[in-house]
Amino acid sequence: MKPLSAVILAAGQGTRMKSALPKVLHPVGGRPMIHWALESARCLDAEPIVLVVGYGAQQVRQAVGDEVLYALQEQQLGTAHATLQARPLLLGKTDAVLVLYGDMPALRIETLERLVGLHRQHRPALTMLTVVADDSMGFGRVVRDQAGRIRAVVEEAAATAEILALKELNCGVYCFDAAWLWERLPDVPMTPPKNEYYLTDMVGLAVQDGREVQALTIDDVREVQGINTRVHLARCERILRERINEELMLSGVTLVDPHTTYIESGVRVGQDTVIHPNTHLLGRTVVGRDCVIGPNAILRDTRVGDRCLVLASVLEEAILEDEVSIGPFGHLRPGAHLGRGVHMGNFGEVKNAYLAPGTKMGHFSYIGDAELGPDVNVGAGTVTCNYDGQRKHRTVIGQGAFIGSGTMLVAPVTIGRGAKIGAGSVVTRDIPDGVLAYGVPARVRRPVEGEASDPSDEKT
Ligand code: UD1
Ligand code: MG
Image 1 (tube, rainbow, N blue to C red):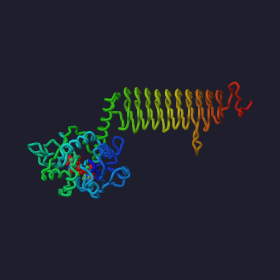
Image 2 (spheres, rainbow, N blue to C red):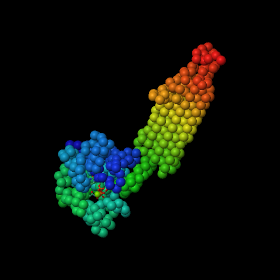
Image 3 (tube, rainbow, N blue to C red):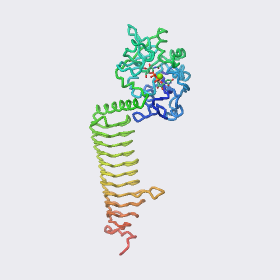
Image 4 (tube, rainbow, N blue to C red):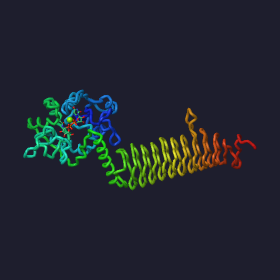
């Protein structure tokens, strides 16, 4: 028998989100909300993981895929009823069952590890997560006897003034003795007036059975912020963001203003990098050491080497080797690869192109579907005309070439090593190494000694 399985409750409609999208699919921390519970369950090696779905079941299944098992709760009759739907899939399968919600994304994996650890140590009927807080957040109250043993959980709606005054709250996260859970869960009674089956009633059943109820009590309420409205959504987003930012700062990254720095969980940043305000580091972005990023930079799925500068630019699926500087107002699109020491000034755009080390493009140029050798100078306003209306074509520029301002490179076209293109040229044919060419269309004007001139060059 395996040690642990998990049941994630995610059947609720989330009416208060006022959304066509099922609540657990709303993004938080750059991922659909449900990702966080699934990730936690996986990290704890829970197997199998059962996702209880109801509202928008089809959409949720599609988004999550077949790495988990699904139990359908057609009518939302309460948390015990929801858990019961997983019973046929998990009966006799594991020693313990972790039950958690799909709408509590800020819950730390370490907390769940501690919960499961405590459970394994004491082997009670259940180990529950509780929090001590002044604001009840509408949570159920944990009732203990004089010896400190947990006797019941009372929902806020049913609580007397005395019970309402209790500060220990039920977070709704439990680790159960599996055999006991599956045996006793069907005995949970229906509770009026909503006629729901409350999972919290398992506490009373454990007491009846003379079984122990353990609790892991945390003091950081932010962890158990659930999401019912978009106000909660923003709150959770902020909690996750602050956590990521704090971890980065403690690892040696300067965030000039953490409140306006948006870094997703999959991102890595090297030591002594400084991140200025209004910077977004998204997806699988990796930034090296000693970089300066922002203000106003957006990097998605981009790899940045060491000692790079990125000012007010948008980088998507790009690679920057060491000592690259870009911006302000640069745009790297998928497949842009800037070699060591490349400089890209304002209003440059690079897509699906490699710029070898030392190449410079200072001002408003477009380089797409191209390969530029080392130390190329791309003059202001140079454009690779890569699209003929039907297909994309490549431009190749050799080492040390000098492209004059306002040059149109009509692809497919190759510019030789060390060639010079005069300003305002429209280059429609390949230009050999080392020559000077200019004009519309560009013609070779001054061949390098020993080389034939361009046959297309007309004598005038
Ligand atoms: C529950 C607890 C309460 C605890 C609180 C913490 C019960 C009876 N009460 O209350 O003690 O303080 O969580 O957040 O358990 N769900 C289903 N199917 C259902 C009902 C709920 O899948 O039929 C899912 C919801 O989608 C949600 C989660 O279970 O993700 C919690 O349900 P919710 O109704 O919000 O529970 P609370 O009333 O907050
Ligand atoms: Mg409820």
